[in-house]
Length: 74
Image 1 (cartoon, helix red, strand yellow):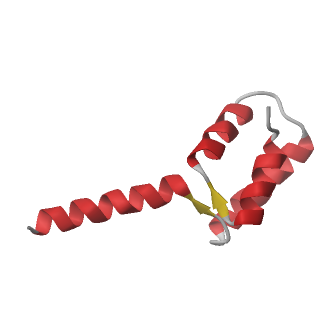
Image 2 (cartoon, rainbow, N blue to C red; image 1 turned 90 degrees about the vertical axis):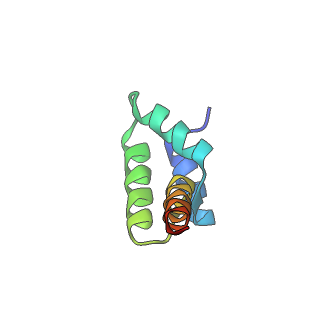
Image 3 (cartoon, helix red, strand yellow; image 1 turned 60 degrees about the horizontal axis):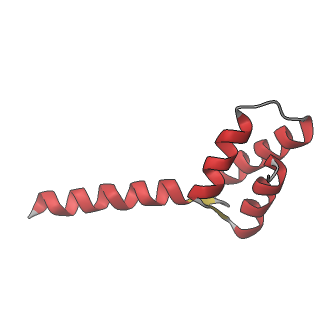
């Protein structure tokens, strides 16, 4: 199973956090993890807040909101 730091580093490297990786992170974060994993997760959070990593879940949510807004105009 992937470690938190592996998933975080991959997302930072690619600039994108997939739905699958996000779900794995949620699962891994619900269990005991070490300081290295915690720090990697914090780096990922910081990168996302700075716009260096996009989240697929947020991209889909924005698209859904846009679709609803367009549909309500017609």
